Amino acid sequence: MRSSPRYRVIRMLASAAPGLLAAALVFMIVEALLPNLVLIAMGRTVGDIPAALAPGLGSPAGHRMLLQLVVAGALYAVSLLRGPAEDALNAMVQGRMSVVSRRRLVEAVSAPAGIAHLEDPAVLDRLSSAQGELLNHEPSGAAMTLIGRAGDRLSGVLACAVLATFHWWLGLGVLAMWLVLRRPLRELVRSRVGTFRRATEALRRSWYFGGLAWRPAPAKEVRVFGLGDWLVGNHRSLYAEAMRPSWTEIERLNRRIALLSAAVLAAYATSTATLGWAAYHHTITLGALVVMLTMLPASMQAGSVNATDFALESMLSSVPDLDALTAEPTAEPATGDAPVAEPPRGDITFEAVSFRYPGTGHDVLGGLDLVLEAGRSTAVVGVNGAGKTTLVTLLARLRDPTAGRILVDGVPLADLPARAWQRQVAVVYQDFTRFPLTARENVALDLLGEPVDQETLMRVARRAGAADLMAGLRDGWETVLSAQYEGGQDLSGGQWQRVALARALYAVERGARILVLDEPTAQLDVRAEARFYDRFLEITGGVTSVVISHRFSTVRRADRIAVLDGGRVTELGDHEELVRAGGTYAEMFELQVSRFGPKEERR
Ligand SMILES: Nc1ncnc2c1ncn2[C@@H]1O[C@H](COP(=O)(O)OP(=O)(O)OP(=O)(O)O)[C@@H](O)[C@H]1O
Image 1 (cartoon, rainbow, N blue to C red):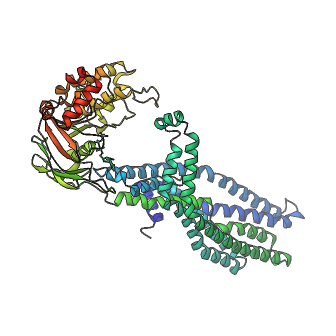
Image 2: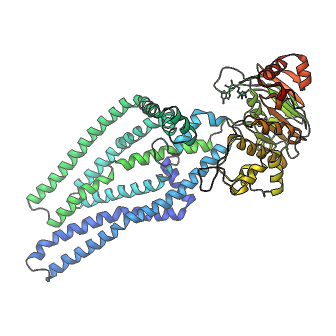
Image 3: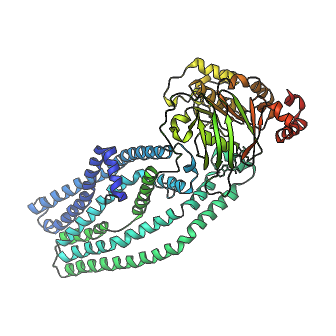
């Protein structure tokens, strides 16, 4: 019981909004009583009509009937308020639960310092389920739906109790039938929902294809390459493929549903016939007959299932996924407690570092040795897929080496607290994020809650070549950098790259001591790139920096250049030394110079 999703949902509401839970429970009682009371009052009114017919409405019998009618009308009027009251309560409970479960989700996925869990299909399946994406039912609706359904069940049981006042065995029989059927019916609902949960990965792919059509970034290519029909087809065939293994099970379940329905039909036909028999033989009054006839369908609430039960079960199926995401340890980089209070002053040493992505059969890095000298710049070059970006993710502790170690000032990186270390590393990623926030927030990321210093902002913008850009924005630093928001404005790829560079430089100003630039000039025009390498020393001065680039005009400015090949550093030295050595670096450099303009490259 303690671990059942039903219990956990109610416990979540109890701790998030105890007042709302109390209101919902009162609502449940009203939900259980009111419809039955309306039916009983109506039935009794009808039962009083014959006695009032002859003496007229002015007689005591007439008065009694009119009083019953007023009571029935009043109860009915009150019962009409249930709908709006339920909607309002639902909105409040759902809003609160949505905030709570979303916060739990965000905290759960952001908790690990690393990113490996975000590439784990099992975690992604859980995420998808915990957000209610599979069956389109927000799990935040579970608490109120559960309480509402409990009210319905109680109402059904009360209807059985009323039936028992006519024949004890009738009320008890109907109740017993629902109690017996409850388990298989619940299992049916659960298996139907379970078939979707088991197909989560395939369904995720199916929804992904469906969503490509309206997400702005892929929508461009969808249109240009005319992929609309293909996407619809793919979405449909993936969905069919995902559900096919479940079809036999669904068919089996449908057959059971048909059988159970026949049993229910037979039971209700017998009950109705019993009432008919009593009416025919005048062993039941008119009022009682009307009440009992209305109680029969009302008693179905005791155990019948409908679309709400499917919705509720799919909402509840998200709860274990939400809990598992929160509770399970993920592939987290090891984290130690050695102090990182002081920014690293010494070298960073990669000692025989190997790395293999989970689920792959080969090492991307295999026994790599490299020293990043303190306060100096090191460029890393290598062909596509050589492992340059992977090396950066290890340095930023987004992943841990599978063998070997990284030392910071002589201390193994694994012994440092991962979060504190990450604050020391400022990175411009190749695929940096374009936050739909203001320019100021994009650079200062002052979401971190620290005051923004305008002078520092201006300084880093100048160094990143973004000062003119900021001055030209519609609302300056306050412009939202996304055309998807009112008053917002999007930037070109190169303009965004300057914003990302300014972001990393701002982090350095805030205390980060390692600057990583992964392809920092890839989207810059020739002039901007020239300005970047003219300012290279100013940008990287005083910090330990790593620059990854295929552009030798950028690479050659670095104090030292490491060539990455076959998972190891095969050449190390400054530009002149490596060119003189006549190895891979010299070969790549010559190739670029001969193809793309000696003037630029030979500077
Ligand atoms: N998340 C991942 N899971 C599995 N393999 C990956 C992952 N990311 C990268 N790889 C593989 O690791 C290898 C190295 O990738 P990495 O991105 O580090 O190369 P790179 O040197 O930065 O390449 P580029 O110059 O193209 O940016 C590649 O073979 C790539 O396919």
